Image (cartoon, rainbow, N blue to C red; front, side):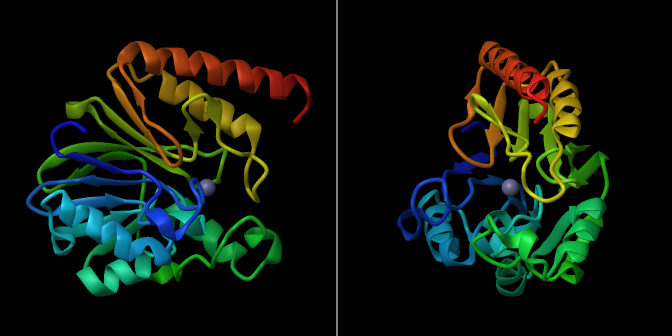
Length: 231
Ligand SMILES: [Zn+2]
């Protein structure tokens, strides 16, 4: 998409209906960072697509999860075991995942179980260094309480998970979801002035500074409407 940025929409391809699995992002370097590996059933397809881009899945050194919903992280344990890659998720989301494990409410919208939290290294918001590159992790509660976004200022890139999409905010009716939190998250993310490419957990990217700005206006309007309706 841009230097060192690869985007795999609906990882899992034909294994799932569109939108069922998540979008996966791969940031390349000496070792690669994979963001949201998706559903386990989609992992072979994702590896094929990575190879088709002339890259080696074996070179993935880190798999970062934006949040704990299984459509984003079910394959994480396999990624760790097969590629010897480190797994990372926000400390807050790991606590949430642990607290929710086994609860039927937690899983009602989820196609599968999340992986064991012990597999993950907890990470926190703030500067995040990987392979000599400077990223920033940003807390993004609202869709899930410990949601995390990855900002790569050098590339004008923001990876938002399910915090929002092109033209719509993320769902806030999952366990731990809250419109007031998402409203604050969207305000914070909208304040990043250098973002030119937003990669969302589902659906198309938001590309170009003016589109990124226009999208925030759409999101703010939706949030205001939902807040007024008491949702
Ligand atoms: Zn989600």
